[in-house]
Structure formats: C-alpha cells, structure tokens
Image (cartoon, rainbow, N blue to C red; front, top):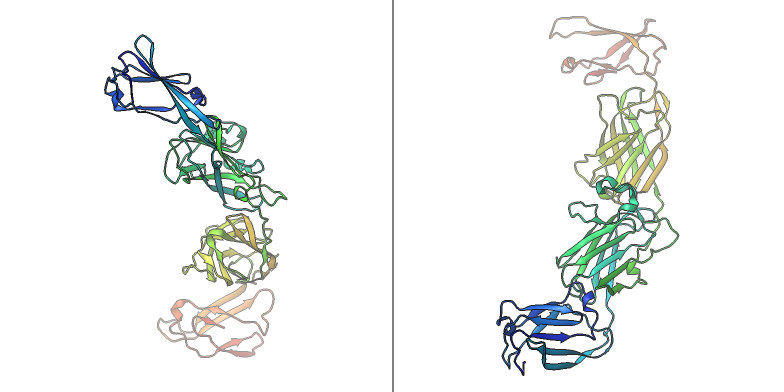
Length: 492
C-alpha cells in the first residue's frame, strides 16, 4: 500500500538481487499487475533489467492505493536464509522518492527431496526376446511448466534394428535416428501421455542413445501419472538376473529437480530364462495309404495344460524329402479341422503351408487333454515307410516353443495298385428290369490270393434296386466260390 503517490512518468522497481539468475529462467516469470495500476493507463509495461523488475508507462497512482504485483515461475534462492527484496519508486526525473525493503522472506530447506516413482511393465522378461516396455511415472512434487523429462534406457537393452524402416525417417544408418517424433497413429512408435491429459511437447526418442525426451506444457500436480510405451527393443542375452536401472530425470531451468531411485528393482526389468519345451506324445493315421492318392492325415496328442490361441500356433512338419513343399497337388488346398480339444465350437482352423510344414492358428484355445487334428488333401508320397513327422506348439507372444514332439510318427505308404482287366455286362439289358450282372476280372501281374477282397463300386443308379442274393465267383479252374453281397453300391 502506497504511503506516497507514484507520479506520472516515473517507474516502480523491485530488486531480487539475492535470488537465482532470473535471465536464465525458461520461461521467464509471469507478471500480473493489480487493477490499481492497470486502470491508470492502457499502456502499462513491465521489463526485467538483470535481477530488477521495472514497471513503467503508468499514470499517477494516488497515495494510499493498494498495488498487487504477482510473479509466477520465480525460482527461490539456493541458500537457506532470510532474504530481502527492495522496492523503489522513481519520479519522472529518475529521482528515488520512495524506498522500502521487504526483509523477512524466509527460504528454508525442503522437507524431503523431490523424486520420481517408476513402475515398469515389460511385455516379456525372457532374455533375448523382443519386448515392449510400458511404464508409469509419477513425482512426489509438482513439476513446473516447461520442465524436461528424460527416460534413459539401460545400454544393455538392444534396439530391434530390423523393425525400423530407415527410409521412413530419411536416414541411411541407425545411428542417425536421434530425434524420432511420436506418432499416435503408429502403434509401433513410442507414446507418452499424462493421465490428466495435460499437454506434452517436443516428444522424441533417440534410437541411437535409447533416450526418451519430452517437455511439460504446464504445471503438473504431484502424483499425476505419466504413461510411456517403447517398442522395437530386444532384451539382452545375459547372465544377469536384472537390468540396469531406467533413469528418469526432471530438469527445470537447467537444474535437476527430481530423479528416480536407481537402486530400486521397480526401475529395472527382472530377467528370466526361457522354459524348456514340454515333450508331447503323438499318434497318427493316414487314409488311404496308397502312394500318389489324396489322403486325410489325423494326428492326436495329449496336452497337459490349456493353451490360449492368442499366445500359440501349432506346427506339423512333414518329411520334406518325401512330401511336396505345398503338400497338396495343383488345384487342391490343404484344409485343417479340429476334431477334438478345440474350444472354438466351429473348429474351423486356418492353415499356412510352406516347405512341407503346416502352421495352424486362429483357434480360440486348446483344452487340456486330447487334441485331434485332421489334415485333408495331402498327396501321399512314394510307397514305403515315411520318415518321422514332428510337432510343435509355439508361444507367439514371446517367440518360443512350449511343447515339442520331434520325430514322433511315421506311416507305411502302399505302392500303387496293380491294374486289372475288367469288363461288366448284364444278362438282360432292358431298362428297369431285374437282371444278373456278370463281371470279368483278370489280374495282369500277380494272382488274386485267397484272402484278398474284391471290391466293386456300382454306379449309383443300381443302388436302390440291388438285391442281396449271393454272388458267385468263377475261377479259371472252374471252381465256384460264393461271396456275400454287401449293402449299398459295393460288392465284396
């Protein structure tokens, strides 16, 4: 409150000589003047001259007026002491007409240091695997506007260089990726946001040095969480059980104001080793077993625990030296069906075939217990015993085998059958008339043995009228044998 008038053409000066260098503050302190000053003129101005705030271009302010000057973003002195601020009022001739010292500004030590809490959530902890690192950061003190937050990753964590398209960023080498801006539309690029939705600016990620940088757009209250997400990383192959610490630093006006506890395991990834795959017991059958024919292959194995589809795929490896790469002939498509153990009620599976290997996926889940799969339209190899088939269940999230059944099943494939000379003739060839069918069958190479079966598939037009009277087989020697006719369109 003025005990003396502030005349037109003069100036008001506040001297903060004992405070930190005001010119180094970024942003500069915000000045707000009370209406008692602003009402005198529309041209009232303020400026800094070193450590002094100057108010000028006002009209006369009467004695007894209350003047309020608010300064935001000021920085307290570094020393714990009682500090002073000097107020001077000058007339239009630069004569000091009022001098007052505010001498009781007490600056004390902080009751506790500012710190940042880190909570890491890696997508995997397995050594040598690709990883997405998500983290929650929060400070126990307010973070001022224009503070820079950096997250330095441990040097041992590797970049997944094969997952980064250098041309997208207009660089020729990975080392040049020093400031890749965030893109919320790209799920593979880094992300950062406050749960309060307060603004962040200058968000970038230095791939070469594995450093995330961002800047606050306004004051952030204590406890507000910052969520970050970093992808295209690989955990190292190491004998260590945990990573080095992620280092989170908050800097304001060139000074570190908060940092995380780097000794805490919360700031580290606790590594684990891949488990050994569980051995599978597998059985199988093929029908028909004749070489060169299209066949259905059925495999069965026992699963000790349930498997969710979003984490797994099934691979069946055929002996590649015996089977075609595509397994099926031209014009045919390999089809897979779950006969038992697939939780999806439709049991419709997707198959990919490459290099004599079938990958089965897109199932809801696999139940614990018996799993049966049928593979259709596989062309049988040459006759003889096949080599062994192998089976794998693969964890897609962490890229490792959970179950394995190598060299478990083989099949006996029959050579192509001998060709027969064959004729058929009805005794009566009038339509819709009961008749006797005579067949002449003559082997061209080996004889038909006594215990062999003769199977004749009749055209479907004969099915409804087929009589079950015994049929007679006449051998060249003249001996006749009776055989029972089977129902349907086949005589055996």
